[in-house]
Length: 67
Image 1 (cartoon, helix red, strand yellow):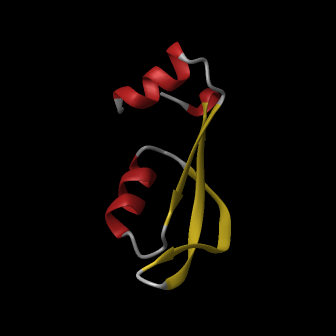
Image 2 (tube, rainbow, N blue to C red):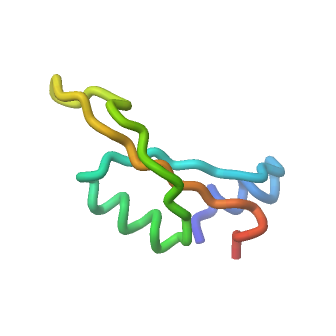
């Protein structure tokens, strides 16, 4: 468990934490899945990296799902 998640849910009283990750960013995808985030969808042409338009995968973790 990351302290930032604990702080978000317990101190800031957030109900939801989101992550937007490029589909080719395998280290971040592996990490977010280990933290039990749920993939919700894909934002097409969401950002530009190295002059290339790329998609983002959308993930979330709800307070009720937090361990």
